Length: 241
Image 1: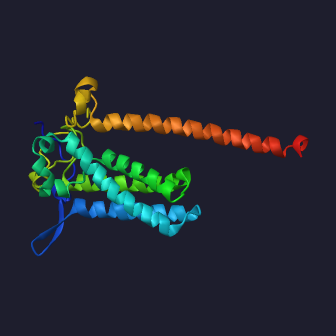
Image 2: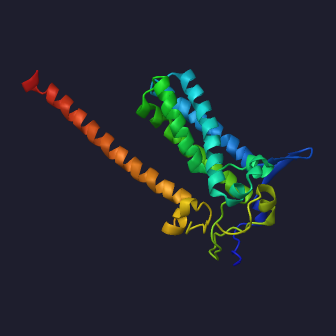
Image 3: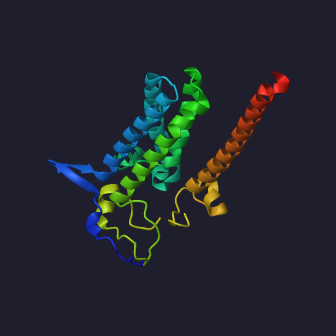
């Protein structure tokens, strides 16, 4: 494996922040907790600003948190060969302490959120707008946790801003020291042979579907808003007064 040039010293990578007696406080776990807390705080603040009920949004956030954890674990089960081949690994410490696959968590949260919003009569688009920045913030903090733990690196490189990952990250996360998508060289997740067929990872394929779907929804909403605005202008014009 090509050794990456290290601009940043390896001791800047802190998979473990500190220990309480012999119990390690892992950087990834701390960032994951911050991700969930930050996402809930931002979502509730934005929901309050838009006139949504505070207590109901708190309830929604807690359900979204649980469903995202379950969804991320389920998708990881399907994308990681070792879990499919050895199902008992589902009950291992490595499985429980891993974050899972982000898109699995996103899909799980969206499905759960849809049904809860219908049940609690929360407006879908207004509530989704309040949730979106929190989801983005949570993803950023979660990725920082991955990076600090020595996980989710890319291809070997000699660029001056490269960072050297050490065996300590592997010892903490259980992630093997191979390089991991055509940017990250991630061979995992060949569900139904789609990765072999397309050359895309599971997350890349889901990302493309989500991106196209979001673009279509944006165009539809934008056209409807313009049509509604035009209707109001026509209704208020002197000829219709």
